[in-house]
Image (tube, rainbow, N blue to C red; front, side):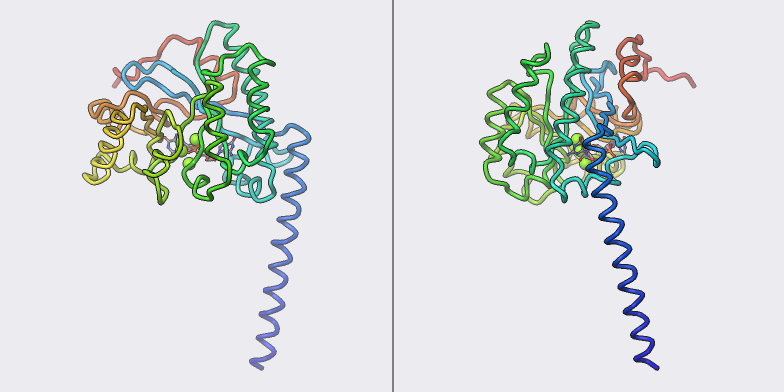
Length: 285
Ligand code: C2E
Ligand code: MG
Ligand code: MG
Ligand code: MG
């Protein structure tokens, strides 16, 4: 009897595995269709001056306009993109749309920058540099308007040539940011090894800093470090006025988070730029 039941379990298990395999295959197929059909689009989250609330730039975050499932956020597909080696294609698709948007904003008189997220695996592609370089000949934008951010976790994989690729991008004038700072295993060594201009303090530190002395001390240490290294800090995931006030007191000038604005489609981002500043400093009670 036990044997019989065991057999059943095995069958259920293989059924389930088949299911997962079919799902994965379907996702991979759909992702290829999405790349070919231009279904990925950047949404833009404002990056602000914490003091005035003025928008200094945007972070571009990918969204997948899925033909039947609606707008999907990266948690549903970004790991699969990396796994199936489509992150370079995704980068190209995002970069083109962003450069076009930057040109449009520039025509309207806005010179804010846009940060694009890149996975470190993309730098392994020998065409990466050329694709970025070509953006500046193809579109009337300045290299300073394009920032590239790389997560600590993707640097951990230590792809060859990444240092050369990052240095080459720097010679173009592109700014580099180290994303999710403090969450990896070798945060400090990356600062020494790679030519970053900005450190993005991970939102997990910001979330707890108001109530947790340790987290607050870590944020202060990161801020001091950036000053000492001639870099700038950007706080991620600011959700409350208290967090913003504390960060300002501690000497952090720039940040982003739901308190200031969620990622929005390009037309909404344009409205944010053209609207006069809605003051968050004196909220109505
Ligand atoms: P990330 O680069 O660290 O981006 C910040 C994430 O936090 C975004 O999630 C953003 O919507 C969210 N966020 C912003 N403000 C707040 C806040 O105040 N509170 C909270 N709880 N969350 C906030 P999203 O858009 O789902 O992106 C998740 C991750 O996917 C990104 O983390 C980034 O690592 C990756 N990603 C996004 N777009 C791209 C892309 O175009 N290429 C690549 N390779 N990765 C991307
Ligand atoms: Mg990012
Ligand atoms: Mg981040
Ligand atoms: Mg992140």
